[in-house]
Image (cartoon, rainbow, N blue to C red):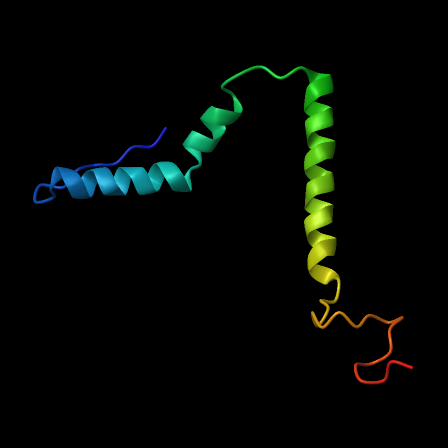
Length: 83
């Protein structure tokens, strides 16, 4: 639970801003959403593997070299030498 103490000279708006920052840093909302509904163990395992596949796909997508965008791949001759 996030607690803050409001100072004497502090406005309600700044205290609320500090409270919101503290809630975000302690990940209270994230945890609340995670426990909002029950997920059966089999469904949880399936979701975990799907998320792992997505992570791996993103990781390998960034590691592949990007093409130049000219359309000349490894099997095509350079432009101007079409014989």
